[in-house]
Image (cartoon, rainbow over all chains, first blue to last red; front, side, top):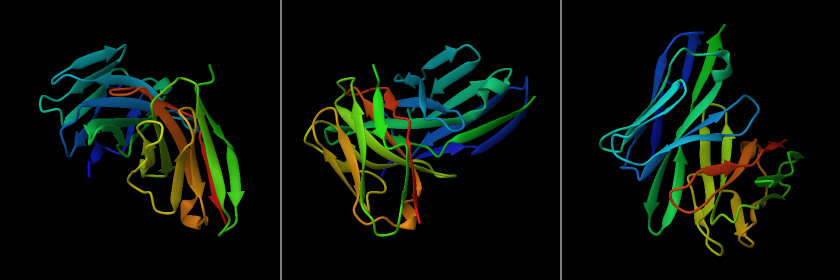
Length: 113
Length: 112
């Protein structure tokens, strides 16, 4: 079945640093979504990418969908303590007449102030 | 709007007991999902329902059953709880395809 893998699983950065995390799918995706989960909370939708090569920005966060629609990246500029949490990518594919959203294992971000 | 509401928020069960986790959404979404979240394992899909009256197995369906009672409600049942089912359970819904998924607050289940 469809698998979504995230690299790395853990990231510790100094406040102010930039970093990038990656998401790879075993199959071609219809779209990819990114979610953020704060400690003790529930996943909250950040963004959705649909088109091949699409790039979207949300303030200091830049999301990219690969040309082959099998991978994606999240780049955070000038990391802040408010960025702490676990970031999930979720691959969406329309198979057999139904939509299925499969999540990666997440990338847990900690920030040293 | 309440969004996605899960009950209960916390539950402790003894091995072999049964229980049903309830989920309701008020956004008129077609698709609903049940995930479990374990440390280091991310969110794993248990069952999903693309529309009222249909359900399909996800990645880890063993030991669980679901019912899509109507468009609003999607329940998850543990017939005979096992310690391996200790986890945080999230219900989610989305509006067709493609669609942003909205999550409930989660149910923290401990099986002793």
